[in-house]
Amino acid sequence: MIVASAPGKVILFGEHAVVYGEPALVGAIERRVRVSARRLKEGVLRVYSDALGEGREFSLDELQDAGGAFRYVKRAVGVAFEEAGESSGLELRISSELPPASGLGSSAAVAVATLKAVLALLGADVGAERLASLGHRVELEVQGSASPTDTAAATYGGVLFVRPGRGIERLSLEGELPLIVGNTRKERSTKLLVARVRELREALPEVVDPIIGSIGRVTREARRCLEEGELSRVGMLMNINHGLLEALGVSTEELSRLVHIARSAGAEGAKLTGAGGGGCMLALAGERHGRVLEALGKRCEAMPAGVTFQGVRIEGGR
Ligand code: PMV
Image 1 (cartoon, rainbow, N blue to C red):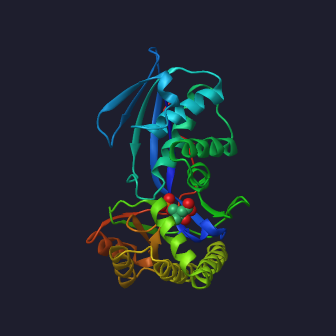
Image 2: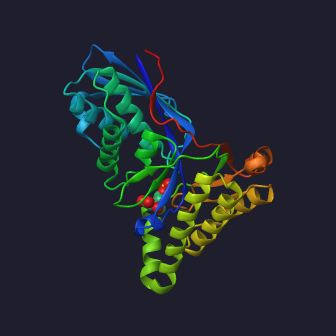
């Protein structure tokens, strides 16, 4: 048996502006998806997930199907078979510390951990760059469109500076980044929120373009502060980024309330993370970690989610 795990992600800075060519900063978080894989004699794929309770069985011909239950898993297995030039009956068990559909990158982590486990089981392990690109392919096939960001975070770990069309750089950070995620548990559609910002920009380009440009400047300055370990300035910049996202209309009453609760409890900074409209917010907790966690926990599902430098890995359960 092989066990592989991959981390989820939070967008630290730059969501929405990245759609218009500005950079974004993404951090892999120490909440992981684990996939254990073993060969089966029967020619089927059997998948069990902690979250869904029961298991499902698929014939190996169904792996081309990018829809329905376990679609990321099915496509990841199909892509892994293609890459390895071999297929096999398989049993996969999936457990996740990431809430699904909340912008924390759980589908990318599932895709990357499944690819890693199955390729290792077949003796066809590939390098990180290839794995990130296979993971991105799985997301594209299932979702229709997807940026390479989530699968890159799941593969490499750490904090990534993403410049659309110009590649992804991994930063070397000074010290830890003690983050707390607050989940409103309100589902939202990234596609819809991106469309809403596009409409606002079309209606008021002269007003909205400078806001997008400011988010880009905030993100570039945040990169410098992160690399130099200036956490209180990172917090300040998170607060500014949240204000700019509010100006773009993607915050909600609940998200902004949680952001203010975190700040009042002593966070260095707080902002919504991801597309907005529900989903999650992020606080940089600093010394008041316990207080911020407690204050947020009274109002939402709050969880510590520090940045992890460990990308996808084999857990050694051979
Ligand atoms: O909802 P999330 O966390 O996947 O974030 C979406 C980020 C956006 O910038 C709003 C969209 C995108 O494709 O970059």
